[in-house]
Amino acid sequence: MTTNSQIPRARYLAGSSRLPDVSPVDDIADILDALPLPVPRITDWPGVYRPDVDSALLCAAVSRELLGHREMPSAAEICAGSGIASIYAARLGASVTALDRGRRQVAAIRINAARNRTRVRARRADVRAPLPLEPVGLLFANPPYVPTPVDAADTPAARAWNAGGRGRDILDAIIEQIPTVVRPGGVVLLVHSALNGVDETLQRLAQVGCKARVTRRHSVAFGPVMRERSEWLRDNTFISAGQAVEELVVVRGLQMR
Ligand SMILES: C[S@@+](CC[C@H](N)C(=O)[O-])C[C@H]1O[C@@H](n2cnc3c(N)ncnc32)[C@H](O)[C@@H]1O
Image (tube, rainbow, N blue to C red; front, side):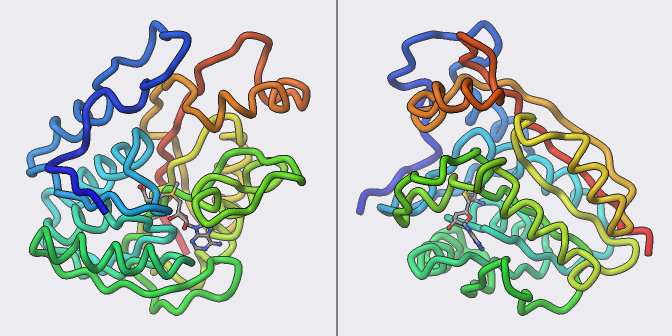
C-alpha cells in the first residue's frame, strides 16, 4: 500500500497517445484546488478506485451544495470508493454515510476518513438491493458508468467502471431508489458520462419526482479503459471514429415530492 500526500497532478493523461485540446493536464488538482478546503490525503489501495476527474467533479459539486448551508443536511454517498467526496461533506459539517459494495472500499473509506480527521460512517451496500438508509437531505454518487461488453472480465477493480451494455445499470439503480432514500426538498448529485445519455438521466429523475438539470460539463481525454474499449464503443455507436475525448456531466436533482 502506498500513500499520496495529495491527489497526484497530471495522472489522468499518463500514457495518453493523443493529447486533446480540451482537458488541461492538471484537471484533478485544478478542480480540487479551486475549492476553499484543503485537498484530503487519500490512501492508494489496490482495487479501490483512485480519485480521478469524475471524483473531483463530485467533490466540487458536494462542496458547493453544502457551503453556506446553515443547517447541514444528513448526507449519503453511494458507490463511495475511497470516500473522498464523503470526506468533503463531513469536513463541511454534514453527517455522512458512505456506502459501497466492496469490503476493501469500506475499509479504505474508514482509513481515509480517519487520516483526514473526519467522521464518516462506512457500510457495505449494493445499490441493486434496497439501501440501508434513512431518507437523507443530500444523496451523491459517482457510480460506474462505462458501457461494457457482456464478455468483459468482472474483477473487483473493474467493478468501479463496468456498468452494463449502456453504462446505466448502476446509475438507474440509484435513481430508482431516490423516492425512498431522499427526503422531500432533498438534493441528488450524480456524475456520469454524456455517453450514457444525459436526457435519459433527466427524464428518469423527473419520473421519480426530481426537478433536474446539468450543473457542470467537463471534457476529458479517454483514460485507459475507454482507450482499450474504443473499438467496441465505436462499433456500438457510443463514440465516433477517432474520438478520444468524452464529456462528463454533473446532474443536480431537487426532490419535489
Ligand atoms: C467510479 S468509482 C467512484 C468512487 C468514488 N465515489 C470516487 O468518486 O472516486 C465507483 C464505485 O462504485 C462501487 N460500486 C460498483 N457497483 C456497485 C454497486 N452495485 N453498489 C454499490 N457500489 C458499487 C465500486 O466499488 C466503486 O468504488
